[in-house]
Amino acid sequence: MSQRHGLTDAQKQQILALEPHYLHADIGVQLNIPRSTITSFLKRTQTRQSTKNLPRPGRPRKTSATVDRYIVRTAETQTRLPFKELKNVTNVDVSIRTLNRRLREEGIRKWRAVNRPLLTKRHAKLRYKWAKLYRHWTSSDFERVIWSDECMVEKENNRMKMLVFRRQNKQEKYAPRNIQPKVKHSAVSQMIWACFIGDKLGPIVFIEGMVNQDVYCEVLREHLAPFLEVLKADGKANLEFQQDNARPHVAKSTKQLLQELAKKYSLKIMEWPPNSPDLNPIEHLWAELKLELFQRYPNTVSLKGSSDTVRAVLRQRLHKVWWDIGEDVLKRLIKSMPHRVKEVLTARGWYTSH
Image (cartoon, rainbow, N blue to C red; front, side, top):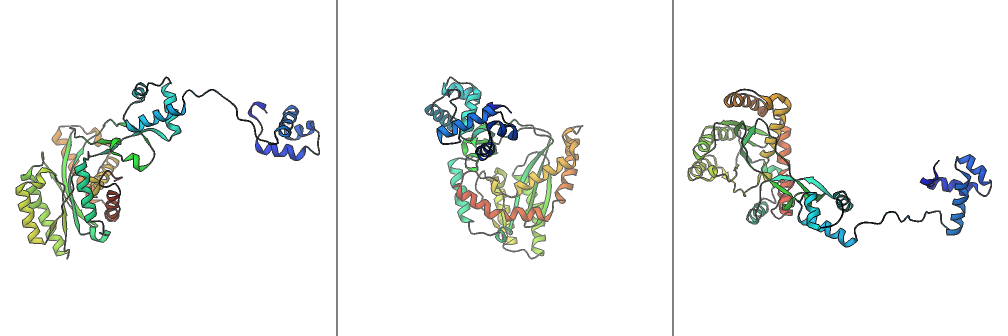
């Protein structure tokens, strides 16, 4: 055994127990420890009246407590700085490795930024107002809402992720300074519209080109209206229709059509806060849809052919995956709604974990 590594607490207790009855050499034989180590340990113990080792001085620390606080404060306020820039900004004469150690001592390291739509103070205020309006709703209440949205399904997505300094907790994870705003980018893709209510899937609609008010009104007339007829026949009443504030959704012609549908089917149109996909459970259906698409059809990313050919394959596969979504998935999403509302209230309208 190497004396350099010292004695364990268990070995120290064994030596103290044997010392009154055996010679140091005999103790060494029994415990397989050099006699000199045993003698030195017992002498130190008698002198110090303690079995603990004195702290070793080690290598002097390169940064003071003040400098450490400055490094941490800079990383917390400028979370998006790369390590090299953090070194330049703080002007501290230490290596990047030392900077990394100082931050990790405070529980801070580089994390991938959470991807969320950009929120402003106005958005947060409206989201908070919406959450207060629905704060008393239960899961059963949210079962009366028809959740709808459009989604662009791309053949592939290889977006670079941003890294930020933060601690491992929700408060810092969803702080505005640590959010990477979503941006639109082009790829071979298929636009879809769909809806669901409670544990029942609504239609999935494949849209050619971009969505404008005329296209959206056609979707409502040709697909939402028949779905409302089905729900009416099933005895569903006092329903609300949810849609976001995309321009085609709030156009004059769209509002007129929705008023007609609302009157015919006793439907209420939900007032929706801006930039709030985290409050719409169908967003998680899109994630489920895409995950299942690429798991079930892994060659989707390498589909060959023209854009029309690829879209035709995407439509066929998406149709199959959509109608295979189980009721348990939908029930779980609806059950999450009261918690989503609570998170918005807690964050006073700012970012949530959804």
